[in-house]
Length: 316
Ligand SMILES: [Fe+2]
Image 1 (tube, protein in one colour):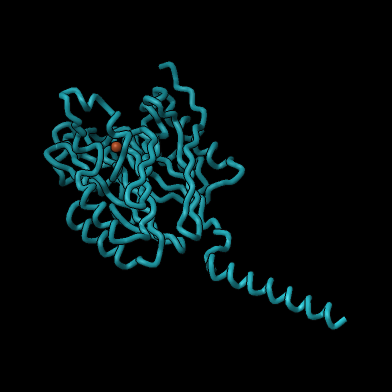
Image 2 (image 1 turned 90 degrees about the vertical axis):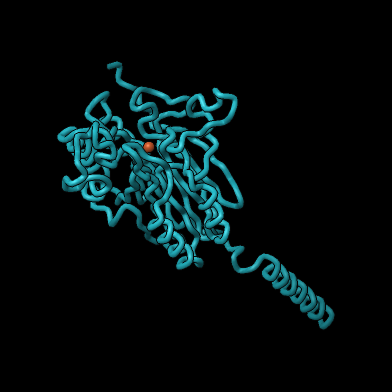
């Protein structure tokens, strides 16, 4: 009996030592990561009361909220309205009112908004027939319409920190894609203050993209030529800033109405299609009418899928 007890004790000891070794090797973070949040990303809606666009958005919202694993938050990616940059009142009001009515009637989720270039009222003063002195002119229009805390802002869902940027830099009646100095300084401070969280950044215009090369005839002169409003002109500056923070994990955008995924220096950049695809006229190149669904996990990893919601364009 003593011999059996001895062998049992030795075996127990071996199992215990092996378990300790495995814990030390894999560490406490080897626990199965938990999903922190599942959110939907609706970008480039381009709403106006034409081509059945209101029904299209309603269909996308119903589709997303009927998923068996339903998101708990909706984040928009900008270009909510067809255009207010060069449009006159009251058409701008009609577009915003139409969009808000669809959200009100068909969306039960909380919504966080990101400004796109077409949301900026009167960026082109000539065509919009504005002076810049009107109430809620410029970016104040989407801030006012959506009750946003500002044109850029952040919020947390531990251990993740969301940073919503304003990509549109109006210039000479048009726009380029970059952060103004005030916003860049704010972003620097945000990243310095949230080193202990995983960072996800949402911008309307891509900070880095592969699809941008295919959008338009960009090699016709024998050189790659990317318009300055297609992708962030300050991409390198942002890349260098992000490089100081290994906790920056994911950058999500829209604007191109195309889907891509680029990984550079440990950060994944996803351009996430468009709700309206080709402005409610069917596919845009290889991109269906669709929306993104993102799962963020407790260990800083994430998953993304782009889901077509089956929209059939109106023949009109
Ligand atoms: Fe856009």
